[in-house]
Amino acid sequence: MRLGRPSLKVRLLVMLAVVPLITWFAVKPVRVVAPTLAGVSCLNASVCVDDPTRQVEAAGLYAEAVAFVPELLGPFKGKPRVIFCATQACAEAFGLGARAAVTVGTWGTVIGPRAWESFFVRHELIHHAQAERIGTLRLLFKPQWFVEGMAYALSQDPRQPLAEPYESQRRQFLAWYGAVGKQGLWQAAREL
Image 1 (cartoon, rainbow, N blue to C red):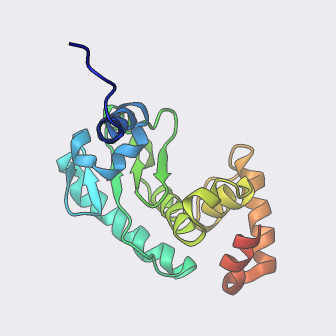
Image 2: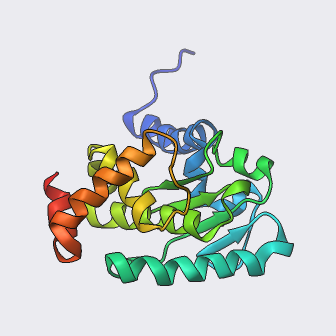
Image 3: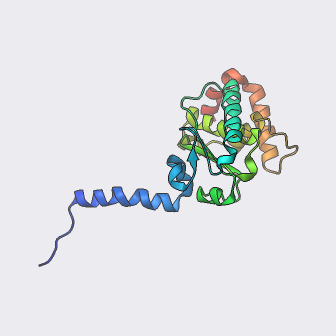
């Protein structure tokens, strides 16, 4: 007996099951959507850690950043999720590689072992705010002097000077920001 081709419905169901699995294993930053499946513990829906002894520190860094960023950029539309990795193994589980931290649209942020500093967490939550206000996909097409320059400048990153091209991006953003001002920031950003 010869079996026929699976129906369109069966093929779609198989794809719906397989594509998320492939994505989970191939695109590690997407793991921010379900961080406990990657081996971290979550204090709540917003703060996760791989080292339970550092929960208080992580919660403090998170609280400072979620108070700081809205003062500059307006309130968050949703509560950001931040995964704090104290170990390189955790950072690798989320695909950080050589990066200190990464924000994946509005899905979540991963803070690597060397990024447990207020300015790093602020930097990443500025990216979260950018994704909320501009849109994750549209943000990919904005100039890097805006995307990274804004995060370095407004996070009050104390490193002077930054390695290039980041220092130039910070200076270019600050010049642009001086011209558009806080009130015109998001409208001008959408027009870039």
